[in-house]
Length: 276
Image 1: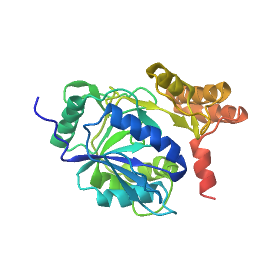
Image 2: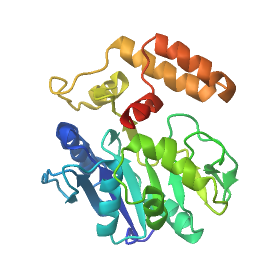
Image 3: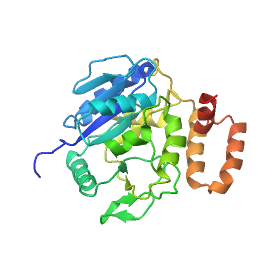
Image 4: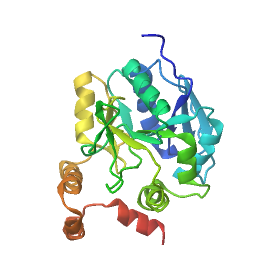
């Protein structure tokens, strides 16, 4: 295969300054496992750390998730971006040829969005004869979401808008309100975990499973700086994910009430609080 061509796609990591300790591990692993990658950007609040092959874009002390995305997009020259969060670590070598092939399919077919990882199994009809590519069901929860994904830059910019708000509002409000009126969106999901990502931090704590991944690789995470979830906390999180995946929509309000009795944290509750 010819030399890998990343001329029309960039990586954009949306950061939160108090997670600087997480960034240090994130970019060390990204440089280790994907050194020959597209141009990489980090959107921060005011911090400007120096990471190898990373351009930092400070977006303002008051900038929430949406303002960081909107500001960074204007500074990125490519038509497509891989939108990532700082708590999804690259933990194995990335196959650049496979990634380039996927980008070619996306460009050729004018795809607006391609999910690269999902907490639950990606469902939907196969696309372009590829068994690993699926057409996302427009009625599925969090079909278009903030899981790691490739976005057409203009599509993302239109969805985000110029207001300053958090990521929860984007997933639970902004996406649903803007996409349900559009029938021409091409949204896909790739079930290969092509970027070799491990979800690492939830609710400001390391997931127990992610620490085990690092231990097997001989990679050390300082859990004195940021704690690991307790067994009980991790169990509640895993149960919430499984219930969300397997339960029919009609039962979810009841199951959510049960979860609250068990002190399970729900993103929708945090969004409601942020709006008050």
